Picture 1 (cartoon, protein in one colour):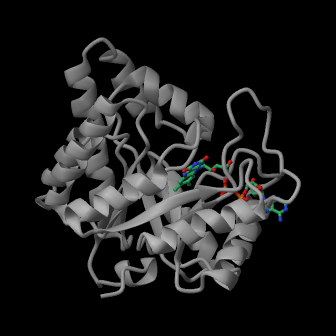
Picture 2 (tube, protein in one colour; picture 1 turned 90 degrees about the horizontal axis):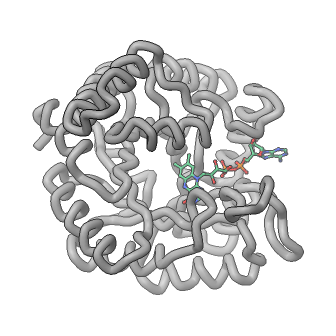
Length: 291
Ligand SMILES: Cc1cc2nc3c(=O)[nH]c(=O)nc-3n(C[C@H](O)[C@H](O)[C@H](O)COP(=O)(O)OP(=O)(O)OC[C@H]3O[C@@H](n4cnc5c(N)ncnc54)[C@H](O)[C@@H]3O)c2cc1C
């Protein structure tokens, strides 16, 4: 059975996927695999693993994808960014992914490494995610390709219209699906979908949700990626900021309501940024009767 992204998303019913990141310690790794085991309850169509996200070091993305496939025979998507890599090194990563049976790549420009102001294309490297999509599609045509989309517009974009045009370039270069940046107001996603359709972007636009578990952490993450927290949600979280159990409940409840609203109005599924923990996504999906 094909495990390429476009086939995984074409089941005709809502699909779930989960994103993890390479932990820094062996204990973190074990705990992450524990979360993966538990999230298998929901029969996700794939797990993805980030690469150098948030400017972190470029960890063992391929090893983690390989181990998840070994444990669960589930599809994976390895993230790859253009940060600090020449085209030859990008090819090398893609070759290794293929040899390991990883069938999907999330093709990204990437966040700059810690301490570096803004993205810098290196000599012999690539400047935009669309260039990476082009490289993969021409030299690794069998690979499934995901690209990032920004319902609230990418923070560096010169305008929402320019950002959307650049998304269309990635789609035309051969992407199979758009995975959206996290957002907390479904209206932002549905407006984005309408705008994409207007410029003839017709591939699946998968919403991305990050269930909130910690107030300072979500303030940091939303500040970094430019996502807005709705006023009422912000006020609730602020009120309970010293009560971790209440915060987790508010976060899971919001994620459950968002998921329900997205599916009811025709989203193809939901990609959950689970930050290597299972509880919040578990509660949100269980609350919908998915388990
Ligand atoms: C689902 C998802 C997963 C992610 N995973 C990771 C990860 O694993 N590791 C990581 O480091 N980061 C990750 N990120 C973050 C991502 O790397 C950043 O958002 C990054 O700043 C932009 O990446 P991109 O692929 O969207 O870039 P691009 O599509 O290249 O766009 C970057 C900026 O350049 C503009 N642009 C694009 N093309 C052109 C052009 N031809 N001319 C002028 N401007 C242009 C765009 O409008 C945008 O503002 C992820 C993001 C998402 C949505």
